[in-house]
Image 1 (tube, rainbow, N blue to C red):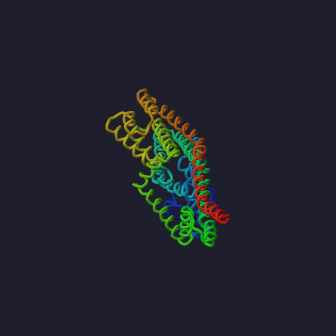
Image 2: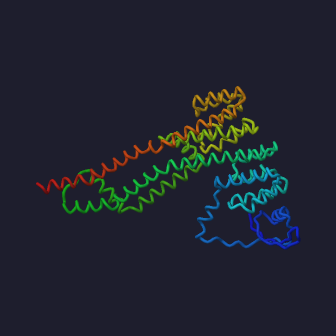
Image 3: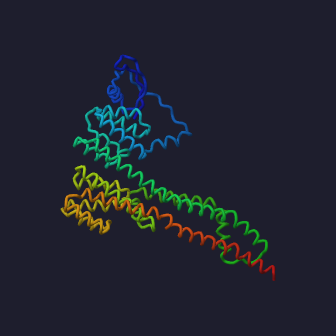
Length: 407
């Protein structure tokens, strides 16, 4: 997208000027015509390079948040309900949008709509802003003439995703804070406290017990080769992050993440809740089962579960029932499998899948409320181990020195 400066005249014949973003000069002219402006001159504008201090702000603006998508859907629903044409609605939202990726996407969508593309097709050209679920819901609403209902369902879906992520973040905040404080405390003790004790012990010349010698050796290595410790830790973190961003690494990490004690089950239930609710929403909108399974798989946020959903899709494609292929996947409980089987037999699969999603949401709420209580004993055990190590390594030789002085 480029920035163009334009001059033109509005419907009252008044001269107007400004800037806009478009893919080409022709696209800029189409945007001006949609805004009832007759262009007189359009030329590429000189854009100042952002300062280094503005880098974090620019990076923050590149992110598409849940709130930005919710606001966009609310505005589109209101404009659609009021009978405003899609092209005019997109043009107006493009001018007032504060999210730069959405602003650029709307500018391109406006051009595509002006050249004859459908709304879903135009949005599908921007997968980083509008995922497959979003595009499919718009396609169904556009095909059935119920675009307002499609935006309403998307609002509910995105709000649910936002609330689930916020709850997970709040639940993990306390244990992460405590673990970080423990690591910082261990580093301070290792780098500053133990070397002072080592100096005292070396002046006395007494033989130190084994735990103390281990602590002193670790402390000496950390002090002398701190650059190696930091470099090695950074290399391990970078290598891990790089690996889990590859397709093979992401599949491996998503599978292992589900087996982490205490929090692994929460991750699994959140992903299954997303699958059930997304599948129910697409199915009740009229999307065929195979297409719904294809759409919903990438939206669960877990590659391992998405691969199991793809196996369910292949089973249904071969002619098996949804309940049988879901049971073969091995990711659902018996209660959920029974509800899927009943829904498939009675033709009320969408309603029962909503019940399945509610069931998983209740389980997630219960687990999140007890997450801090479940993690607290583990944290206390680690704190006890840390205190025991310090007691054996630091205070044991002090006791022996005191006994030797008394003798």
